[in-house]
Amino acid sequence: MAINIEKIREDFPILSRSVNGKPLTYLDNAATTQKPQTVIDAIVDYYTNYNSNIHRGTHHLSNLATEAHEAARNTIKDYINARHDREIIFTRGTTEAINLVASSFGQAFIKPGDEVIVTELEHHSNFVPWQMICERQGAHFRVVPFDENGDLQLDVLEKLLSDRTRILAFNHVSNSLGTVNPAKEIIKMAHDAGAAVLVDAAQSVQHIEHDVQDLDADFYAFSGHKIYGPTGIGVLYGKEKWLDAMPPYQGGGEMIDQVSVEKTTYNKIPFKFEAGTPNIVGPIGLAAAIDYINNFNFDELIAHEDDVLQYGFEKLGEIDGLKIYSQAKRHTSIIAFNVEGIHHYDLGTLLDTQGVAVRTGHHCTQPIMTALGVEGTVRASLALYNTKADIDSLVAAIRKALKMLGK
Ligand code: PLP
Image (cartoon, rainbow, N blue to C red):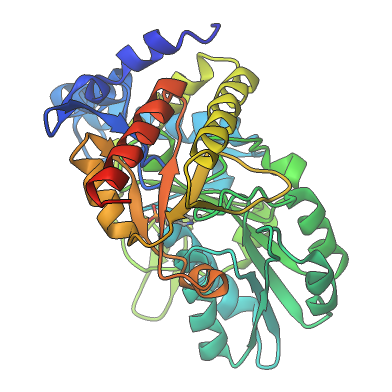
């Protein structure tokens, strides 16, 4: 299907509402995306027609729910090109997926004196769990800095990698700067040093290439709500060889094989990592979101988003006193900025009065803010339904806010 942006916008009912008496301009997609009607319908259909607990059911509704849940696993597997459905584990989100790996991989493979590497570009979700496991296991926590353009300093990574490095965790796209990290190159560097790699794909899986086999990622994590699906559902992809070798993350129903007073044995993957009644409707909604994206040619979606992004850089760059952060070699979907003499929060609040939704603050990346020497930024972030008209509304709202502030 060729891209018809007006038609796409009609698919997302919330985009036609107004906020503070103005048409909504939604530019907070890195925090969460809006949902197409098909996703909303899939969720309503589940609760209306076949709500039931899954697995081990003997009745019709349970079988329908189980089939839909497992079909969703297959849709997700295809979208990221995993080898097997069993390499797809459902979690609450990226955060839980990363905590699962840090805890379980950490318990099995990170020993005192070993090293874990992350980067200064990480969301706290891909930073703090690694600090915690390093503390627990007596391992060393290493951080790759970024340069003045917002690109990772790969020469430093090269030096940090050693035969003590057990795992490198980094994001494909920075949620604060929009930097696209050269994931394939980084993964190869880590593998050459004998380290496993986790890719935080929370900001990449919906915007750029997302083939886990091509990347050769050992682990790959993302959140449903950032890719047009519901909240409360996320995905952890892991190579089978790692998932088989890792201990369970949580104990409870479903993750067991046999339980006795003497000993408990565990289920096979992915169920070993899915203790308890899962978020049943979450994967169903997420699969509907992926089906929605699959209606389009993904390269055309990327081209459209890039076009709007470049227009955003150009138009925001024309505003006096506005500083855009990050001139990274490759960029996607995010523009972070501040206006001289104005607190990011004040600017965000004034934009909201004009119906423009952006996010302000440290964006859960305090190490980035420290490196930039700021407390926070204003962040406009794009999704497939944004247009150049949204950028025009943002720019007009900023100019009006500046006038109101006497600038
Ligand atoms: N990683 C990145 C790069 C993110 O942008 C986010 C959320 O903004 C997360 C991890 C955490 O995602 P969630 O809160 O959905 O678990």
